[in-house]
Image 1 (cartoon, rainbow, N blue to C red):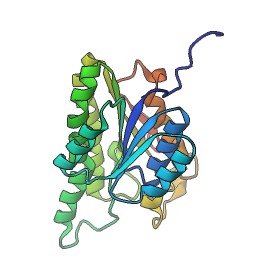
Image 2 (image 1 turned 30 degrees about the vertical axis):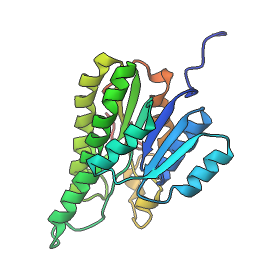
Image 3 (image 1 turned 90 degrees about the vertical axis):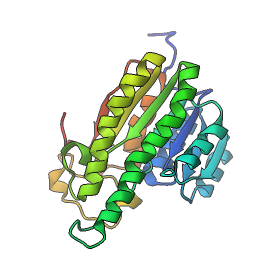
Image 4 (image 1 turned 60 degrees about the vertical axis):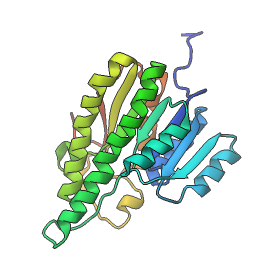
Length: 245
């Protein structure tokens, strides 16, 4: 085994992370920085503390607020980034609401724009750059809810994440011939701001607990590295055993 190169590195790579201010997103940024990546972080707000933390550790970081549901804003963000070696499409919303409420249909539209159309915006902007480089990685974060209906989630979130899972495969078939690998990660219930007001029946999770954000971030970062060089169109299930593929 001596002399083999370490594939678990992101040295010389620039990674774009959407939803970077959230619990999982911030951990992805920290781990990618730890592996040597330069970072482009985006979220609606709240990026400055993370940017300062990473820069204090010696990382090169650009942070920019962006409404990823707006195609023009995404294209501007990606266009200004230059080289893009990896995209982590993580930004999402998960309203804990009642689908029988008046006005719920408008929330459905917002969820679909944020969780599905934004991924298309990001992929559409990044893919030409990666194709020209003949190299690139996209990691699209969905949810166990898109695999088996979720534990607490409402139907708009479930439908959006099911759509994301199939979008991973659609993109992978088109990107792989150009050296661009597209994979997904489907987390289970995670202790993060998105779930902080929710109670989960832990007896329905074989491991008996929720995930910590870093436990989701490591598989995401793995898919960005050379260690995942023969993976495309795969969805990694990281859910404590709730869904077993």
